[in-house]
Length: 284
Ligand SMILES: [Ca+2]
Image 1 (cartoon, rainbow, N blue to C red):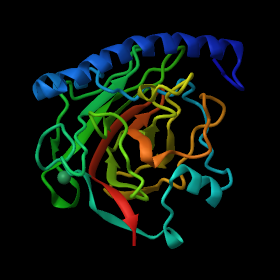
Image 2: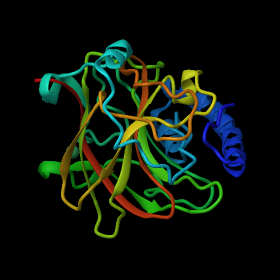
Image 3: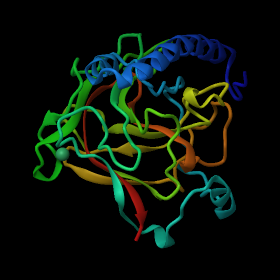
Image 4: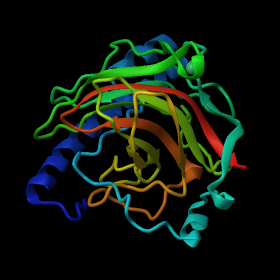
């Protein structure tokens, strides 16, 4: 396994975590198989983090490559990333991922998307509430429901935090090449950390893709949320992996082969996170 730029201690920690990941992913595969049988069972499993759970970055203190140069047009074209003139986007006509108004734990069933929401947390003391995941009262723009999760994340050896997310499809990688990115509305509670990383798992970074030797360093963007609902637009052309870990380290996300999206909290934090109105973006 390649752990480029890692210390010996760090490598050991990563290897230990990978062992855990292998076990949980086996569970995840079984859980997905049950999906067709029981949405209720799926919900229960998702709550404890068993379904297609986007595993953590291990090095929670890693800095995202926010200050690095933009990805070249050639690389983006090769990766199948749709780039909009001037970066101008709008919600895609068939882009609705979830607004939670249906009060269930599945994505809006549209254009082949049928994944279920899940939470994740390390086993070092991090917590995720509510115990039974589901849309909560109080949505963006006066709507009735949003996804709301809260808790504390542990720190120290082996801790990586917590989060909430969803797999786009229960049938393998999802082709989102016709879209330019994803937007959503989010806010935090008064006592919450502002720092949340939005992550996009593809076949190169998600263990289910069968490619990565050191998985879970998804392409993404570090955000600073506020206590008011705000819209965040994340373009596929701009998302990057965190620096210093992960194998492989491709030059760009592969929108044609996405697996999951999630909102992740790092270590040693208190969080209270609201999410609503998630949609794929198209060019204006
Ligand atoms: Ca809503």
